[in-house]
Image 1 (cartoon, rainbow, N blue to C red):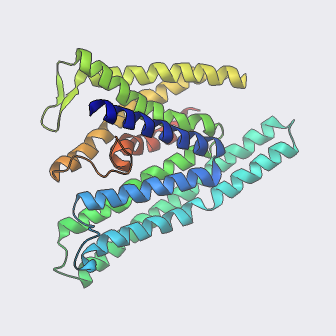
Image 2: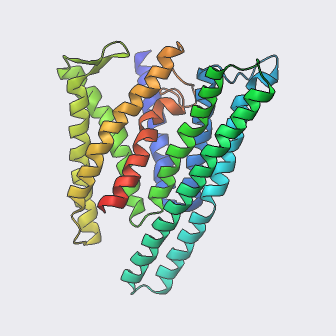
Length: 314
C-alpha cells in the first residue's frame, strides 16, 4: 500500500512540475490562469476547512460568505491581471522587431515591472477595501446567521490566497522572470524536501512540538541550506547562460535564504489551521499530496518575498 501511495505521489509530482514548466516558459495568460486556479481552489479549500463552505449544505445561504469571497477573487484577478500579459506580449514583439537593441528591451521590461507593481498595489488596496466592505455588509444584513469569527475567517480567506499568489504572476512579468519564477519553488519545495531528509536523519530538537511534532530545528536549518545551495547552482547556470556581468549566483542565494525561512512559516501556518479544525488534508485534488493548499502552502508565503527581494536586489 505504501509503495502504491509513493508511486501515486511521484506521478502527481511529475504532472505538477510539467504544468509549472509550461506555465513558466509560456508566461502571460498561461501563468495568470495558473495563479487564478491556485488562488481560487486554495480559497475554496480554506473555506471548507473552517466550515464556511459546504456543497451539501441544506441552506445555501450558509455559504454566502465563502461565495462572496470566491467571486471577489475572480474579479480581483480580472482587474489586476488583464493588462500585464498584453504589455509583456508587446515587449516581446518589440524585441523581435529590434533584436540588436538589448538595452532598450531591458528598459522596456523594467518599465513593465514598475507598471505591474503599481497596478498590483492599487488593485490590492482597492480589493482589501472591497472585501472588508462586502463581508461587513453581509454580516450586518444577515445578522445572527454568521458570527464575527466566521466573518473574520471569510476576510482572511479572501485576502490570503489572491494577494499572495498574484506575486507569482508579477515575478514572471519581470525582466528575467522566466528564471526568477523558479526561485519561488527552490525556496519552498526544495526547502521542504531538504528539511524532510535532514530531519529524518539528524533531527533531535523539536521546532514546534505541539503543532508539528515531526519538524525539527535541524531539519529547518537543512532546508534553508539546501535551498541556498540549489539557488547558487541555478544562479551560476543563469549567469553563464546569459553571459551577464551580474552575480546572479550570490543574488539568488540571498533571495532563497530569506524565502526558505518564510516558506517554513507558511507551512506551519497552514498546518495550524488544519489542526484547529481537526482535518488531515485540505482536499484530494492532487493524488498523494492532498489539496492545493497542502502542496502550495509554503509557495503562497514565499512568492511575495521573492517578488519584493527581486525588485530590491536585482
